[in-house]
Length: 279
Image (cartoon, rainbow, N blue to C red):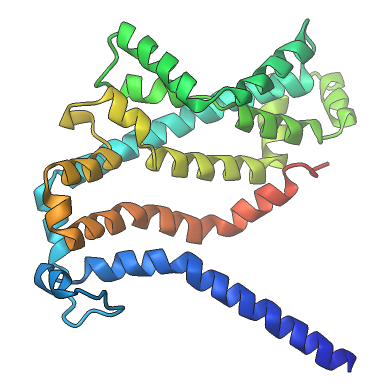
């Protein structure tokens, strides 16, 4: 009886997980399916079909010819790499200072940092927009990158991870004459690598999916990101008239993130799991 109950329970759990997986993956399937339907067959479907009668890849060519999508992908890559690299340096130094260094008002400053997380993003965007405009940095990579080079949440996450490393190790390093920077580079960063890898991956995804900020500070194609490209397709009328080609553009833009997640999903899980328990 116990075995039968266990089998029934496991079967129910797997059934629920399978249904949930179908629900989560269906939008991706529909996006891919729509991208391989021809314009004529898509518009003839008064009732949407869950298969393609005449698959075609011409929509992917249309996605690149209707807008300079290659340029937008390159801009997004530059924006993502520089922003992630600078942010990693900033949050690592900040997290180390809060975790290991002693200075006047450290607890108060850290509390104020955490309080910033309570401020709505809309208010921050308005402030950043005014600042970037006053500095004449609109339509520049500097204007795109500067507001994203730090994160209170990532500083908090990394600070807690650094704090889990024993004080004895830090004191022993100081007795040996190790500088704080060398201790950070040679001891803390290697120990806390899973959390840092997780932060990098999450930041890359965040930058690649940026939409509101790029739309605010760029109105020239030279600095458009992929999010601007999708919006440009819709505003030109192409998105409303040729949904399959627009879906092809979305597939192209989403593919790098999907590959990134599939390659590093174990690292993400490991970093989240050990983020607060490393010792």
